[in-house]
Image (cartoon, rainbow, N blue to C red; front, side, top):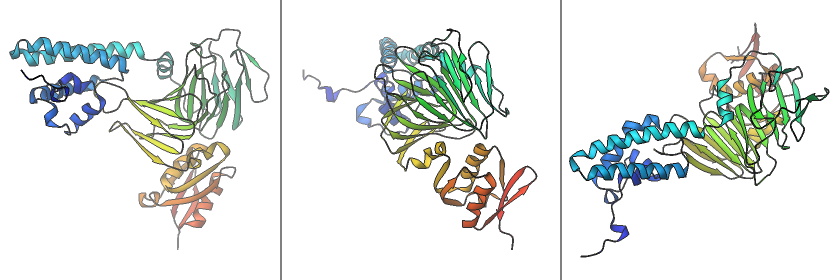
Length: 392
């Protein structure tokens, strides 16, 4: 009997579902038919369609375990060929059970905490919420928060140190809430620096675990992470997770935006997200000078080469714009100055502008600079700033 070569073997349903590339090709009907029998391909599609809504991000180790379980269920059912689809149903039950177990086991404490608390969104001042229920209101427009190395002391602007009474550990979370019109710079206990933009919230421990550092962001922030090879730094957000060792990058993850944007200025990061892969968490690396845009609708990331200053200059008090729509500029300025900016019509909102804007000026002054270069005019109407076509 002729011995079968590895290249002659047909892959099974479990092979498709356990491999990111194969699973994605299956969903887009791009699999090579010679690799799979129709039976295995139909089985993989059936499991995918039945259990797709239950999928959560899994590690490679968890993915391998799940593939083994599915394979065992399928092979057991194939001993009785009339029960192939019963085997598929059993595999689905294994999948659903494992995903819920893994979801509960792998969800980080900081994500549970950050998504489980509600905060007021209409506050006038920046708020620092300490463990134990203590709150500090910060009235300055550009504030600074600095932690001691042990996390037990906090300095806010020029105020005296705030003592933390030795209660700090990796599960003692602090929260900074920056309203529209304000910004703050935070130096964490590991010496990493975070510039938090208007309308943002950052959750973090006063002291980090010995093996990892995690923070949770909603909004926009620029990170300058202090290098520590033994303790990688993770930034968690609604849709993606950024893993870094020592890096300067900007993450924009506002809840009212359709996408999550990451811009890498220096170093290297790895983005983790629930992508098109059926079983697992997708990963994508970035190099300096790139913009990565995650679209939650199609669960994919696209990367393009950019001038990073276009995305990070806000921390230095100015905006570098290159063919940005007036609508996107208005949204940035609305957050930065805490003002309402409206357009006469959508056609006007879609026009583009390129140039540098000095954010030390008022919102009206910045918009009037744009108006000088375009066929528009700026008007203050009640509590709104209106952008409209020039009146003849």
